[in-house]
Amino acid sequence: MAVVSVPFSLADIPHSPGCYLYKDAAGTIIYVGKAKDLRKRVSSYFQKRDHDPKTQKLVQTIADVEYIVTGTDEEAYLLENSLIKRHQPKYNIDLRDAKSYAYIELTKEEFPRITIARKAKGAGQFFGPFVSGKERDYVLTVVKKTFRLRSCKNMPRNMRPCLRFHIGNCTGPCAGKVRAEEYARQCGQAEAVLKGRTAELVATLTEEMNRYSAAMEFEAAMRCRDVITAVTHLAGRQCVSRQKDYDEDVIHFIAAEGTVYLMVFHVYQGTLGGREEFIFEESAGFFEEFLLQYYSEHAAPREVIVPEVVDAGLAGYLGSVAGRKVVVTVPKQGEKAKLLELARKNIETVHFGDEIRVEELRRALHLADAPRVVECFDISHLSGTDTVASMVQFRNGRPDKRNYRRFRIKTVDGIDDFASMAEVVRRRYSRLVAEEKELPDLILIDGGKGQLSSAKRVLDELEVSVPVISLAKSEEEVFVSGVPFPLPFGKKTRANMYLQEIRDEAHRFAITYNRLLRKKRVVGK
Image (cartoon, rainbow, N blue to C red; front, side, top):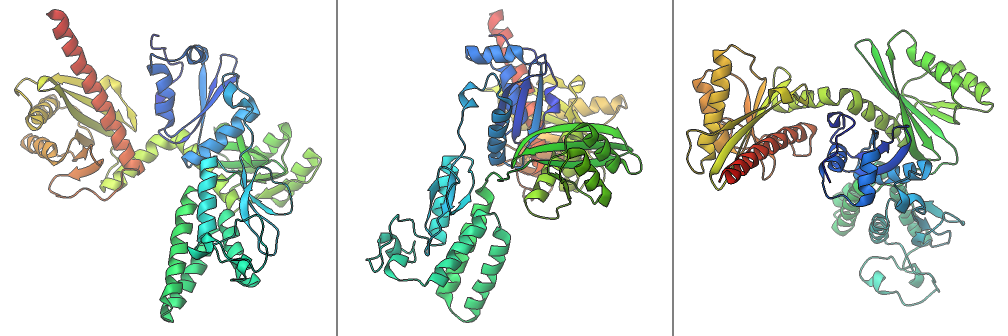
């Protein structure tokens, strides 16, 4: 299969988790997918040559792509499920009839047990549905063990406690080892975690731990510490769907330089189902004007979640148009505030993503000016033969392919990446200096401290005072000249991921040139 031309700009798609929606020429959604990295996943459809027949047909039909950024990979799973069920895409046959995810249940008994429920029916408390069976089982195991809740179906009184009691994973209500009040407290803590209220629980447990420590009750203090550790870790992994019996709209905007960028997220019974984007000129009272105009043409859901207080009469107007009560909410915390933040994040990603990561890089490197033009160098060879170098340029957060350059190394024999790097840096910037052309705002070297030192020595000789850093592949560590240890920002930060993207592009460009030279040499023989 030949590589298919891309009908849209891949550079517009961010390196973020989320869902992508492929559309045909008529604008119909034909496929919904999820990804940890949206750009890499979407790019793979058009770069691979070994697709199965079904995927080949899909790729040939794609005319456009829409995407929704999520905060985590787990959120992407939930969003994908809801989008597939809502749009029934033609090429999502295997998932079209997927059933709802399972729940965790706390039964309604004097000593409730914790278990799995396929449906949220009955008198107990239900939490979920969960993203996957694996994630649900993990949450169930941790909560059951942490808060020592019973899981046995039958609980006759005065029986011998089971093994879970003896290893400390259950408080033994079956054998009368725990009072009803204390067991209810255990259940309350488990409920708080399953509802996502981990911050307040951690604060309470921390106070308890400190009191036990002050009273020299170290065993109880260690118990609190272990629960805090488990709850904190669980909070980072747990992802459940919000359960509602009504629809909501979540609306956020960013106003910048006289222009308003606004998004409307449609939430159908607790699950995000789609979005709309609007761009218009900023004016006094633009937000309320937008709401009036939008809901005069669209049916308002029961609740509209917005980032700022609006006129009290607006909710009444929306209710009169909809024919029922409409609540306008401005949340400050909790799940609704998180939905607002997700909407804002999508606006930033779609319209300001490049500016944000350039600014993040400036802050991470403590630069006085934003590194709007970044040039990156990489060396490529095969066992010391056909040694080449690449230079790629990113301008305002995006690759500027018109200013890519490639070099054949002329003065170095064999494997010597340091000398090769010195040669290519000298050739690039001696020419720019001689021709009095624009210098970059930042120079990025692919490699560790050795490659960085080689490049810095040449720049000093040429009296080029451009900041230069290197990115080491092993741990994605960033080094600056004269500092023996890497800079203290992690490889998952937006700034470091931006550097990785630039470095990976330079690596790709260098390898492509190296392969071309090897091919010419083999064909020439």
